[in-house]
Length: 539
Image 1 (cartoon, rainbow, N blue to C red):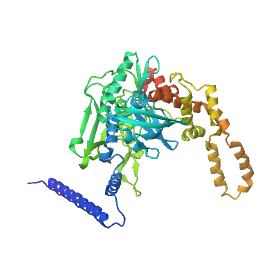
Image 2: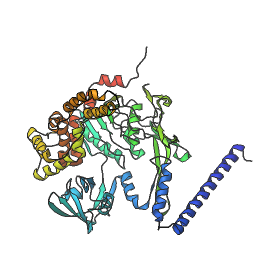
Image 3: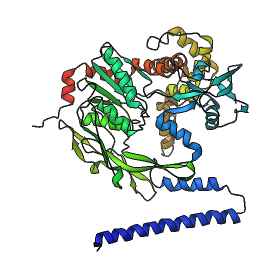
Image 4: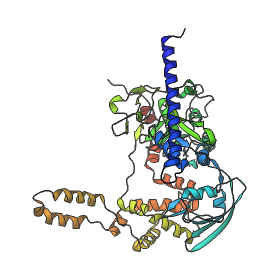
């Protein structure tokens, strides 16, 4: 005889199945009738796709429908592999162009450069095509030919390329920052992420490093298993790294380290920021919970949700949130509660009053509900409006293209600098270019004038405001001098990218990176590391 609880569960399940069947029938009937009666022709595929997207938007941003035609893009996101020419493309200055050829792959080997504007792919004129369409044309089975025609300055360049299986490394750069400090930049968690980090770390150990900086800033995450294996490089066998808890039993899993660590003693600093998410947060959070690393930077994104890909009919898929993950201290770092929405349908962050305290291995207090907080905070670098304008208007990018066409080579990434002669050339090149902007002081003054005009005494102070406006109105020439340090840095990284690609950009950025400087300082002081990783005792 069924218990009351089991009977109620059985009834509820049947009610839900009936509700699903009923609403699916209504939806199918609606599409059929619209196709028959609507005044204009409808596109059933498009209409259903819009309906599915709207439905999934009611859940969370990570549950998404993947139609058959998008399966290649999805495979790239999860595996880092695809058949193509090996180039990042995008729309800059209003046209589609090469943004970064990956070193060692057909695009770079065939001579394509940053800034090359697409004209044709095979026989297709792509000047008015979307970036996604050009990307689709460039991709294809490995060992097949593809013809590409581009515009470079005033020249038209034609190249015949052979597509290859493209495997993008999760570690675009690693190296020694100084004699004792190794650095690994981890940008993704696709297949082989752990193997990429392991290989880099072992090579650095062979070079004699005694401390390590692991950089997961701007890393959006990816495969959970890879995160577990990366933590295992530094944590003993048999330790819990993360557990997933969801509605169905099959997703409730405890992930533990399964191997002996490569190094369980080397001092580690992990760099994080507001764009470190998901698997990146698992790595940073687990190392923090075991007091194995010092976290430096800014609070992470706060994505504590796990997605599973479920196959659907007609080769489509749905990536659905099936669980939340909890790191070793027991905390879930999910920052937004998508199950509760306000009257406007918006999901909100977990309020501070509802965040719970947990403890690391050494008894340090850590909180849930809002990402991973660093042990040492480093504020983000701010830039002057003139620098934003030069970057946003693609002027530094365009100068980089012209410089590359005229200059055969430059010094290695860490040695190359923008000297006075080169900076003067850039300033002269800007003379007939439009890059006006509003400084922070000018914006504040605009607000002052707007509110002052509402006051009865405005006429009395107008002359003072006019005088102030004359004094604060910026001079672009002066700003190019005042803010030349940060402009030179942006220009330096742009030029380095032309000669040394993605790896060179990362290496060049190490020179003036505030978080890296802080990491080097802390790692060199074992007493400070111990102090940070030890719970404070209140007396």
